[in-house]
Length: 228
Image (cartoon, rainbow, N blue to C red):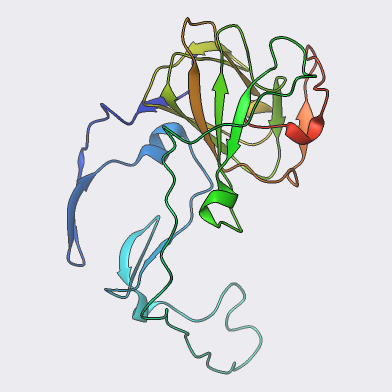
């Protein structure tokens, strides 16, 4: 059995959208991958928000949460709008970003190079990582995590994804969503002849509980634990 995957290069855009003055064609990649942890987007210029139910005018959004109507009248809350200007946002080319050298103490098969994207982008809530695998190498031991999903996007090469149902061969443009918990157990391997480069998101600072499964070899430095 294979994991659900979608190629962002060749996926068919089959969902025309003409709603609230937004007109484009798209596709719901998250639905195809079985993703569960998707949030909402805010469009300040048009005062609209988007979420699982579509795009709506933000001024029609309610100002309360669960349990409304059970605690009596509540004070109105003033909505703070976004500033008209903001500082320039840094950009990172994930195809060219330089990865740090592999841990020289890691055993053969676990010597991957990585570049953390969060510090380069000034992020404080989500992080991302680019991982490079030389032929014959792999990422950290076979594992799963609690508290978050992990999305893997192949940027170059032909890595192999080991997962609970077996293995899948991936190529550039392939996108995979790994659920939290045991069903999302995985590891990346490079059995090809060229360097494989993969982007993983979100990757945090280790606060999400990470658990290694039987059959792994421990890393020399657990602080370097990364995706895959």
